[in-house]
View (cartoon, rainbow, N blue to C red):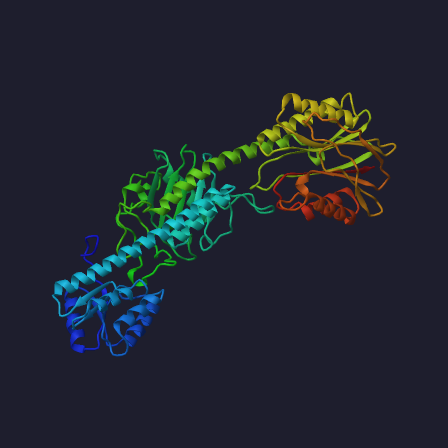
Amino acid sequence: MDGYGRQSGATVMVVDDVSASRYAMGAVLRRAGHDVVPVASAGEALSELDVRLRAGALPDVALVDVGLPDMSGFELCRRVKARPSTSALPVVHFSATAMEAGDRCRGLDSGADAYLTVPAEPREIQAVVHAAVRRARRRTAAEALAHRLTLLSEAIVNVQTARCLGELADAAAAGAARLSGTPAVVFVIGPDGEPHWGSSPSSLHLPRSHGFARPAGTPTALPETAPHVAAARLITRIAEGRTGRTQVHSTVVPASLWPAGFFRPGVREDARLILASGQEGRVQVCIATPARQTAVPAAPLRGAGLYRSAASPRWGSPRWSEAESGGATSHDEPADDRRHDAALPITALPAALPAERPAERLAQATALAAEPLLMYQAERDIALTLQHSFLPQPYRLPALPGVEVVVRYVPASRQAEIGGDFYAALRTEGGVLTAVGDVVGHSLDAATVMVEIRHALRAYCVQESDPGTLAARLDRMLQHYHPDVTATVCLALVEPATGRVRIANGGHIPPLLVRDAGDAEYVPVDGPLLGLALDRPEPSELVLTPGDRLLMVTDGLIETRGIDLAASMEQLRRAAAEAPGGLDALCDTLLGCFGQGGEDDIAMLALRLG
């Protein structure tokens, strides 16, 4: 019997130069159900271990005579223990001659696990072998558990640091693949039923997609027969009607219901699904792996001979049948109420050990991490909608006699937070007023304050067009209604008839004047942020000539973490000086140079007399 109450035969290498002794020892072990590998010398034993190591079939224990002809059993044990690939192999020394206590201690010091004096009773020999194998298997099982817990903790850290649902699904899939040693796909399904999915690098041989978002220029509708679409629908039906919070369930979907080639091209196989719901029950997470798993990558574990592949479906795993394809899940049961389906050593880990089911724990952690991401995504979508609804589109800019204006607005990447960037182009009694600004912060609050600033500016310029006066009024408005908020703004009033421009700056990047001659320089204008109640300097003045272009941008265009803003501004100045003529060409050139994958929104306004 092994340490968990099951009969378990072991492979025993017997190293003895006396053939009769080898035979007698082997006969005792074979009667006990063990496989015996007899060798006659230390050199032969090392060679046999090398052969078996390459075949992945190391013996479970070695019985070594201490008096071998080519080297002592002590030296053989030392060499076996010194090799990382065989260091976990239990070694039991034996001798037919009486040994002094010092010699027995020498054997233990060399790494031996026990000492046996022969001849001995068969029961004693069997007990010593069982004890050595049991200790080794328990040690290896503990190392396997520690390795799996390490993989689980790394996966959960990656899941918790995901910045969007796509990254979350990818991180969970990569972690599940490392835990199971198989391809893995993870689905995150929100309350609206929209699935987001991620896959491990070796799985799902289809174009990658998250939340069915598509790059520009690709079809707007996915094929209804796409494997991940069919899988997501099946998962949604299985998840319907579940009760309880943060419950984890598992089921096996037969190959006849699961999309063919989903995990591996051309392979139709059962799918094991682990489903978990978040605390609020608004999100479902599913980890999908092939039901027939191979052994978990044993990484730096010792004693390879103590492992076998778990190549068959698990004991008593619930299956999802054809009759249940309409959505019933009566055969499903909580993961905590069933045996674990992970690849384990030949001696399984005790059921009472914590973290026995790392894949289920990963699914639960993913569901808990998905809920705040879903809330953030909803807030971000609202803020984007708010910004887009209040920022005039380029084709909807008001007619501005005598001035040609081009605008660009680029939201931050999906992983970044929404900002409060804005632009405006307005007709006033004193000329054309243009503005570019940014509310400090990234949130829905920043977007709503941005809308208030734009509306306040539109209202103020009905009776007042001087940029210095408008900046002062916006400053007081923020102090009164939003005392904890600051914003930057740059205001420029252009008189089309004369080309005269008055510019007021409130903590913003100064405008860039791009001359028709091919040089560019920043307008020397500064001032404090809005909302600080500080004295404001008089606006600066300049005169535009035909062909001159005035460029106003927010810092999202050039600001890069870890790079000094002054250096980025100089790069922008040089790029603008070298840009082709025309307002559209200027904006598109600069966006191509600086506006890729930024962490902040970008607002850009370029104008010239026209």
